[in-house]
Image (cartoon, rainbow over all chains, first blue to last red; front, top):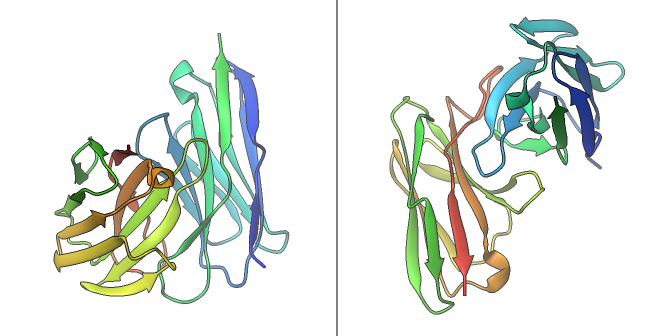
Length: 111
Length: 115
């Protein structure tokens, strides 16, 4: 079967660092995406990993270990506007374009 | 602002009505997608179009009928919907369905309520 796990909810303090984990078991792997979704809005693309290692984009970084089926999204210098749902999604094998989504992690940033 | 435009933003319809959702992108993307999203859940794939041809139908009931008139437009025709079909309907596009690092770009969605 295909399965993606991420924590349901997390809370962090403004200015702090938070790490959102994602583990996956999929038949085939063509990359892992992280999306941010504010309530009532569209998901927006944050990052993509297909090779092992860390990808950094400003305050956001994403890490991948293919051998462990594991990724994390690291958010630094948290701001109130980072309160949102964070979706981990894996692109499986084949050229279908299909993404397998995790259930999403709701992050609440507190002052 | 997103580069994928969806209309209308909100739609309320009765179970006997016929309506259509529209999606437009001008990024030159050749893959377009319809998703359904319920509150506090991830998007759920409904249909995929690749080069204007339907390539995936995730066993969606026939009361939902997709159409891709050209490479920039995607419609979702609705007829005889049920209350459980009330949800946020998201359109997305990507350069193609294959390849690496081709993220899907989502529209803001149509919030659909069935009375």
